[in-house]
Image (cartoon, rainbow, N blue to C red; front, side):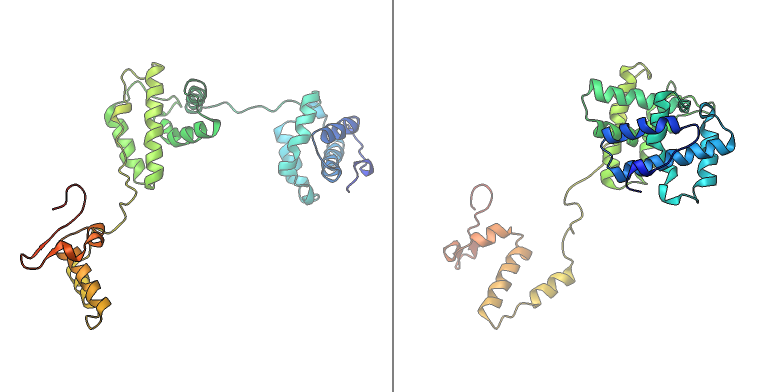
Length: 282
């Protein structure tokens, strides 16, 4: 199986075998992988001969039959996706017809134009452009009418806001933030292209996202009491800890201010503290 020269090919595609192996080797296929591909060619050629099908008649319906009827026989060949190199070679020679590309919808055509704008006019990388397009695909699809055309002429600020509010409910914050950024970009593109008659990018609201917004705002009364009572006042360290916590809790001092306190900063008679914090000490 690892040597392509051991694979026997008969039938209408026999004349293509030598050239197919040469192209596989030139493309970097190892002998074992090239032998697998040649076995695919041999199997397809034999199937065409048995079915009485000319290679020039091999279109998608026939390929579906081949996959459905013969996949179980040669399951190790993974025909479903393994035919891509073989069909590419045969189509390049004109032995089998070229694949018929499905017609793109108006929404996909618009997204293709937007992708080109991002790549050419904005200078984005292919990966970033693809991410932006994926983010706004649902918005463009939401504007598709029953006849498949995309309705942009009637787009209003209320439409944009309504979409953002509904869509963000289904997203995590980071995803929502990326979506609104991409949507602003799309709306700028639509205005530049004259597909909408007014700039709507400023209508898109921002998504609130703060790095530390998940932190708790503070301790409740019971938690503070429990924290203070945890200090062992029978020891010097415990009394020190209690003093530090009382400064933090009762005076609202910052930890840096507490750490900077020295004995000379305490006026015991006046009951005052000299606090060195942000700005002037006081």
